[in-house]
Each structure stands twice: as C-alpha cells, then as structure tokens.
View 1 (cartoon, rainbow, N blue to C red):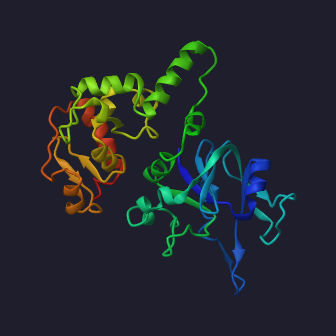
View 2 (view 1 turned 180 degrees about the horizontal axis):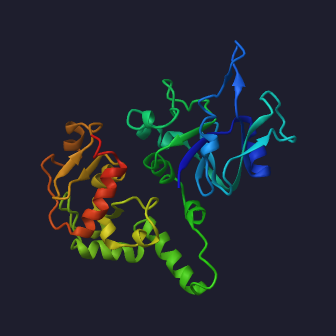
View 3 (view 1 turned 60 degrees about the vertical axis):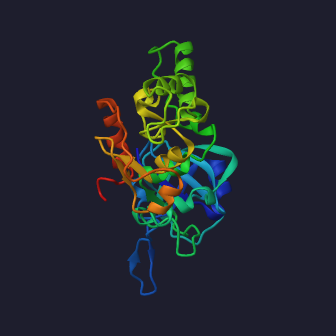
Length: 303
C-alpha cells in the first residue's frame, strides 16, 4: 500500500459526486515542448488499494482508497473546467467523507522541517501553506502523522472486509472492536501492555496506571490486524514520553538505550523530564521486533 496526498481545489465537489480523481498526463511549456507537472508525475503510479488523503482549503476533507489502478482516460465530459489537455489518467476511488474536516495545522509542523523533503513534490511551501501540486507521494510515516489525527472514521475506512465463510460475523465484530479499542489504548491491549510492564512507564518510572497511555510501538495505522492488538507492540508511557515516541522524536535501540531525533533539542528533552541517558530494561525479542519497525519508520537507520 502506498500513500498519496491530493490537493483538490475547485474539483472537490466533483470528486465527492463521481468518486474518481483525474489529472492531465502532460501540458506544453511556452516554447511548445511537452512537459509533465511535478504534481502529475505520480498519478500513473497509483495502484488499487493505495490510500489518498484529499485536501482542500487547509483541511483534509476526504479519505480515499483507490479501487482501480490509474488508467489512461480522456478528460471527463462532466468536468466543469476545460483548461487542461484532454489526455490524462483516471483513478476510481471509494471516499470516506470526514464529518469534521481535519485542519492541517494539527500536523503540518510535525512535517515541516522533518519530513517535507521526503515528500515528492514537497507538501508545504516556504510560506508554510500546502503547495498547489495536484498529487504528492508521501512516506508512510507522514501518512501516519496525518491519519493519527483523524477520529473514529479512520477505523471503518481502514477495515478490510474478511473473505466470506472464513469467520462468523460475531467473531469478526469482536476482533474489530478489539482493534478499535487498541487504537485508543483501551481494552485488552491496554491490560496486556500494563501487565507486561508491571504498570510502570519504562521511560520515566511513573507507576500510576491512571496516568499511563498504552502506546503502540509500531504505529497502529501501519500494523496488521494481529500487531494492532499484540501487547508486546506497546509501552505504558507517561504523557510526555508518549507524545515524543508517537511522533518519532525519540526511539530506542534493541539494548534499550534512548535514541533522540536531531529535531529534538536536549533542552526540550530535559524540560520534559527525560534524560539522554535513559535506558529501558526488560525488552524482549518481541519488543525488539516492533522497535526495529519504529526506528525504520522514523528514519533512525538513516540518521
């Protein structure tokens, strides 16, 4: 599964009505040479099952899943604009319309300065506003930062229907409920995480369960159904540690030593009550499996 961001502009109503995206395949510059806009070049690469975040006027307004590979198609006749060339690519999509559009201010500062350069083309310009590029390829960790801000609509959007006859409906509903509760650090997932760590935050030593957050090591969004509810895919973290870990500003080596992103200052880390010499004790091979995913997601292998 790949992730994309699309800036809909004036076409947002048409996308809602007809459930597809369309972009020109090329244009011509002033000298008459055929050229492909940076915002169009990834459109032919979209595959069935890919996730597309639909942005309009500083908000994510729809979540879309491609139901077809991108394919060559002429400009739709019912489109209200005709300024583009007729040749282009079309992507059929299923849309989830967010009841409350997600303001990009909730996540853009996590992307600016850390991950903007990893998006192709960049998501945000020097003015800190979304660029006018049509379709942008975004890394999975950028998608996670955005989608983690979405409410319960994310659950139904991400659920993949089970194959008929595989499980009884009641069993499917119980498993779905468990994954839903795991996303917000509740239910059996929370019980398992706290039990493994003896009701104590391994980072700060806080041992009041009512203050601890059952935080996924490998992002809930990027985990498969089994990983979502696996107690070893979690730490019971105090709020400060949870926020830093969830955003990838800190991670841990397999020996438990603290890893700090270059985007987090020692002054801020200390002010939040965490020492650079922090060491987690009690990691198992199962925890290390998920920590390797966390480090890879947030680029610690690259830094």
